[in-house]
Amino acid sequence: MSLTITEALAETKTLDKRITKKREAIAGFLARQEKVKDPLAAEGGSVQFIEREEQAIADLEERLIGIRRAILKANTETLVSVNGDTRSIQDWLTWRREVAPKQQAYLVAIRGGIQKVRQECQQKGLAMVQATAQVGTAEPNDVWVNVSEKELAERIEKLETVLGTLDGQLSLKNATTTVEV
Image 1 (tube, rainbow, N blue to C red):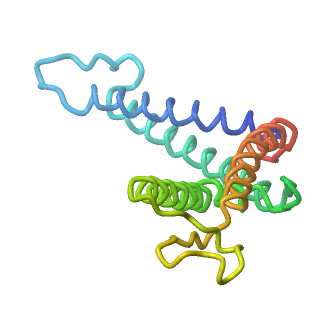
Image 2: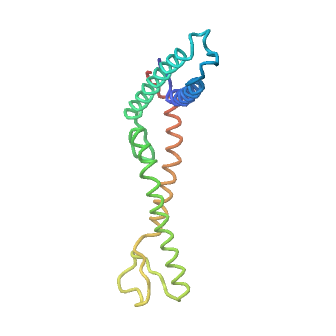
Image 3: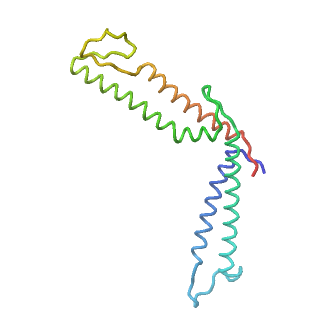
C-alpha cells in the first residue's frame, strides 16, 4: 500500500489513538464479581474480548512499526537542498532538532554580549574597535570587538532563512514522497 509521508504520519496518530482506546476498553473488563453477569457473555465473554482486543492492539502496533520503518527509510533516502546544502530528510530533521537551536542560542548570545559591551563602553565613554581595524589605530582604553558584527548578522539571517525554507521543503517532500507500508 502506497501512502505519502504526510498520510503515513497522519495514520500513525490514528493508530496511536486506536491503541489507547482499546487499552481503555480492556481496563473496563479486567475483573467483576461472580454475582454480576458478564456484560459481554453474548459475544463470548470478557476473557475472549480482552484476548481479541490485545491481539488487535498487537496488530496495530506492528502496523505502526511498519509505517515508522517506511518513513525512516524514505527520510534516509530522500534528499533535500536548502540554501546550497543538500542532506537527507533525516539529517535535516536531526539538524533542525539538535543543531539549529544551539546555533541560534550561540549566535544570539554573541550578539547580546556585544550589545552589553557596547552599552558599558557608552556608559564609560570608551570607544569600540572592530577586530578588522588596523593595529595601532586604537587608543589604549578602546575595546576591541573580535567578531565581525556584519558577518554575525549575516549568519543569523542565513540560519533563519534556512530554517524557514527547510520547513517548506519538508512539507513539500512529505506531501509528495510515497512510502510502501
